[in-house]
Image (cartoon, rainbow, N blue to C red):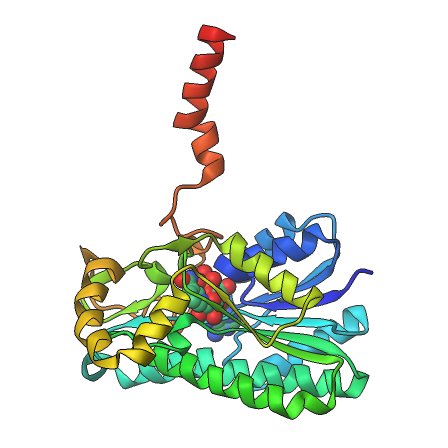
Length: 309
Ligand SMILES: NC(=O)c1ccc[n+]([C@@H]2O[C@H](COP(=O)([O-])OP(=O)(O)OC[C@H]3O[C@@H](n4cnc5c(N)ncnc54)[C@H](OP(=O)(O)O)[C@@H]3O)[C@@H](O)[C@H]2O)c1
């Protein structure tokens, strides 16, 4: 049966891949983020299913309630709420402007809590529904120069677990926290930067479609927490069992694998306003298989076919 799915954070990365994945299953969509022009593009990508776009800044008072109301008005119900809206900021804690730190926490933690409040009130009234929040492996471990993001993701981890305990009386209302490791999305380039060099996802890097599949799968097979990333378990074990060793290694590893070395001037990235030009499903940190097939690999294949076929 076609479900009504709200995706907040639908214009880029994991949220955009998730919108497409639900569309492929024939679900009806409500697409939300700040950039209206990119929302219209995503609606085009989801052609074939009914999709409503609702330009929304999740940090604005009343915005999440308005998103829920627009959904009910159009579709009469909400079955699934996926919250992927988030921003990131690089910088040493004492050098990161307070306003940037606070806006990251407002977006990544407080707005996720706001979405949970709106979605769960609706689900409690109707008796059923699935809420999917996106945490991170950084909700279980820490990394330098990402204090606002890490603090938000640890807060989200605690919030999700608390809400899951409160929901034990309502077995038809599900809350799933999806925790990716490194994913190839634009979030690293879109981040505010007060560190002087551009960030990047440390390897191994997963494709956003993989996280999208995990999110869709959570609706069919709800679980409390889903980890997407081959090193997540190892990182969590190292952080917990050998904290002293972890703390010695994490700084050098972050500088080696998590930062590109490419210099950049101080800027606020998308923390306060969207950058539609930088929005896409992928961040360009992994080769796109389709481009490889139509590019060099395809050319070699065509040459071999001409020679031998
Ligand atoms: N990429 C990774 O490696 C990774 C790893 C672990 C966890 N995650 C988590 O996965 C989720 C998705 O991240 P991503 O990598 O896909 O990021 P992304 O490509 O940068 O997408 C972020 C989305 O959030 C929206 N957004 C940001 N601020 C907003 C606001 N105030 N109001 C409404 N929408 C807002 C953006 O649209 P507008 O700017 O147009 O509003 C965009 O659609 C996040 O929770 C992130 O923390 C990502």
